[in-house]
Image 1 (tube, rainbow, N blue to C red):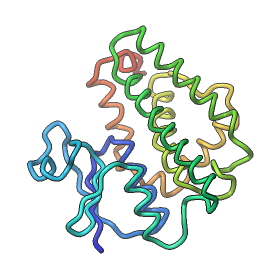
Image 2: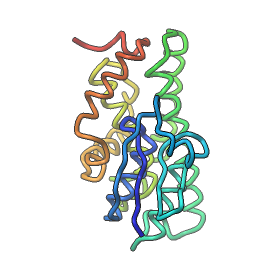
Image 3: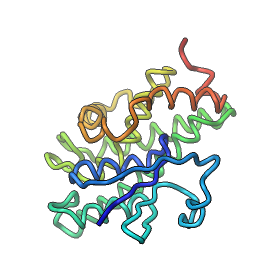
Image 4: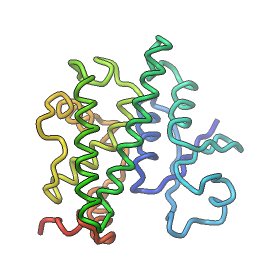
Amino acid sequence: MDLELVSFKLCPFVQRAVIALKEKQTPYNITYIDLMEPPAWFKEISPLGQVPLLKVGEEVLFESAVISEYIDETSAGSLHPEDALQRAKHRGWIEFASSCLETIYTLNTTDCLTTFDEAVETMKGRLTKIEGILENGPFFNGEAFSLVDAAFAPLFMRLDLLQKLTGVETMEGLPKLNRWSEQLLQRESVQQSVVEEFPMIFQGMLKMKAGIAGSKLKD
């Protein structure tokens, strides 16, 4: 069955699905759209008007967690633990990663200093919670790369870029989390999950939003 992923180049939720596709070595095509001016066909098939969408023949799937699980379930091997309780816990942490992505969106775009500072502290608090449950790695589930890793990699990529571009630090004093982030950012499936010009596009987004983070961009 031919797979087509409908994407927006900056979307972290699309990136999760791309990582899953690459980890499972599943052939796919990708179509990029402009969410500011989406094509008519996209409006017709996207229930929420959001990406990612995965076109499976004539069928359409939406929501990144659903898409990632479909990719996992329809290809050899599994990116989920065998144990049902562990799978459920992993799904919970995937949702936790989604809440972190909502926070970093606020952090990247708000022009209110109070809201920005609150978002930084919220992010630090959530990352500290993750530090407390991580073991020795290199991945969330030890030696095995999982869908939790695919869910957190886009967050770590954006936090890393934010730190390099603006000096905003959210991962200080979290050694296990930093080791996990480094492992993910070095992984081929993660590096290839965004377009080559992603850092430039991310920087351009910060400038365009003209928020607190954008004002901190280094020359």
